[in-house]
Image (tube, rainbow, N blue to C red):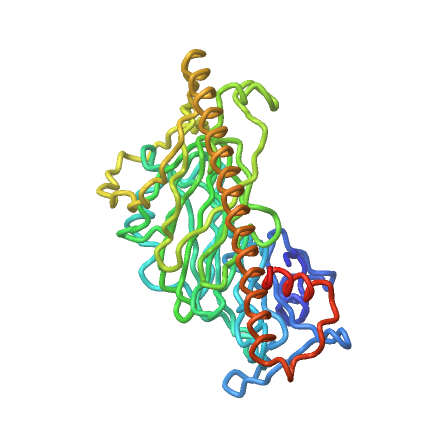
Length: 418
């Protein structure tokens, strides 16, 4: 969760809380921090204890953890995830979990190679805002210490201004070796981890976009970072950030869009909504290949992209190129044209379809009739053969055969001697 308070339940002890209160009154905090706590489901008591550290002669909290960056900076937790439970067999101990949220500061245990100082120095903050960044970190449940942390921000390449990114959810692959991370970037900005050579190859699509990232669970190494969206606003689903995994470890993303994702929207649809340039919202589902992030093409409906007007910063112009070219998308599937033809062509097509259907139906009926007649002849031949065999048997074994006592036997004998 997130709190402005203090205490052992929120990852602090009373000695730390007392530092914020000079007159002995309740401590006050004006910025938000995230927290994690371990609770016994049977008793509701904390799981863990204050562990004594002999090197510092202090007690260490092992039942909760406070997510905090810098003073007066907000750190908000929005979700967490862990390795899926096994469907069969004995469950393994859950040693680690992954926590998602947003921060306006910088969290501890950042992985190497991100937040390049030269890159960041060339970007100006938005006026009146420090900018929010999405975070994902891995925490050891035994010690309640972070193992590694990654942060994703956003920027406007042409204006050299930092944007806002928000973390929504995460999901772990069935084998526990890959962690997927989702969130949004706002205002037609581009997602990045501010590394000196950002390999994402992303670009703004228009409005609010969704990002999907993948990291190696062991050390937080980035596998891929994708920014997807239409020319309008797009959001991941509520509840775990709309991210899940299939049994093969691929990422499954669900969300909603006012643009064209997995369906080409007609311009006439934009008469709905709050204004003429907003369409009714669609839901969508996409899959991203494990380790690579490859996915199907995003459609283009031809509608101008939604761009938020942001005043340029007074910072000097900076050339952040060259950025890698966008990642290769899979070959598009064959598409069926939605453009209608002339009335004459449509009529001819319908007539031809009817003629072919009638021909196929007639052929099928004729084949059934032929099969029925062949079956009837076969049964007749079998009955005649049975009569001959029965009669020959009576003649060869007159003493061992029973007396003729049925009309059928009498008919057979009559036919033989006639």
